[in-house]
Image (cartoon, rainbow, N blue to C red; front, side, top):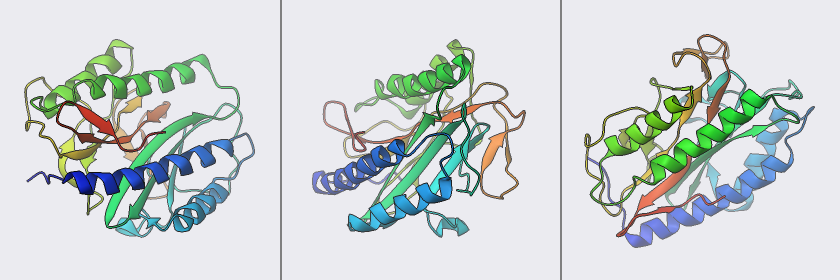
Length: 248
């Protein structure tokens, strides 16, 4: 069953989302060649605590960090490390906060210095796939409409969508119903209703869509080693459309 949030609960979740957005902006300022992602992780945790929240990801299913840091062919759940970021990398930062009884979750992929035209296109297409999905979010639409819009746009640009991972509902629990795939058919799945809150997160690969577990035991990476990209925002269904709760 998909939980429905009250307007008061959505207001609290938006507070947590704004905290995340501010933290993400601070982390973005630190991304440059030579940056150490373990230091980004420490900064993220410090900022979450300073805002009265606690990290959603730390200790979740054994994950040891506050921040997921995924570089190049790693698409999600990568561990922060002591290895410096290099010129030309792209890096995905995924972060969650538990604030006043509710979780908030968001992710962005950033360039590290100057990146290739292919990497620039990948980031642009992944962001635009989210925008295409967003257009489908209003009462009366179906989750399949969101999934179709994501897949249709990404594949029209020559890339592929990940099929082993998905977006999700969110609230008192970090992962709630429904699961929201990055591929699907129009008119399928549950109908969208005012008060639903979920995370839309296009995950896009340059090459094959299949993933494998990274050597660190937490990250997932493209099976063929190709570049990957991740974008995520938390969205509420409103009476007449939608509201992004993790405004960047």
